[in-house]
Image 1 (cartoon, rainbow, N blue to C red):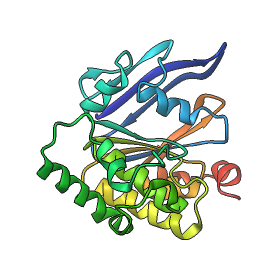
Image 2 (image 1 turned 135 degrees about the horizontal axis):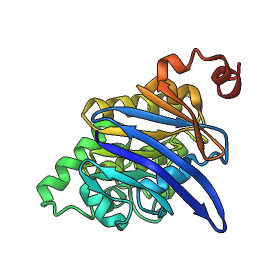
Image 3 (image 1 turned 90 degrees about the vertical axis):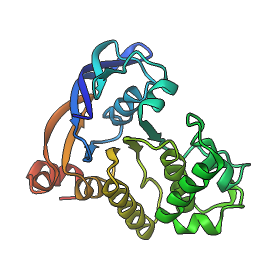
Image 4 (image 1 turned 180 degrees about the horizontal axis):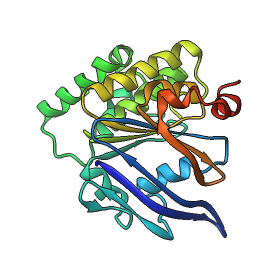
Length: 236
């Protein structure tokens, strides 16, 4: 098992917002977490990445416990985050943003160029925009760049927080295809999405989070057929 989250509890301020969540991500799999706004989805992701420390529970990446490690060590072990809201350096170019994604890697110039070309293979539009400031890109292109920057860390596990948020339907489809393509290259993905249809279509396994508690888990394709899930998250 690539990732094991075991009974974590997480506080924001004085309130506990994640109440004993457990989940697993197998090697080379896509696992989705769906749920309403405020369910605790992003908090779980941020805790896996080391941005929050659980008050209880454990997080294991392969054979290493990571819930007490700083973010840069978690990244070096093979975990990367595509944050909600993209979080790009808008005054820097596409290429400069991509290079920053490899800050934990001691790459030669040749290796760096190879990795950048690998990102361009997923997102050809970024090659056209490589000298352009990130802040001048469209919303969809910025999301491509955010994903590409995270891929520059050469992750074994990619954490994705609402990658389709605010995008036009055509761009949502392109991001969905990119998720499948990245996974096809052997990268496991833990996907947090409010677009439940997208999340369940691309994933093999899924968890439903409600008020900080896992209320349902199982095969993502079968979950689409569950009446309560359809009514609550898929518009009936």
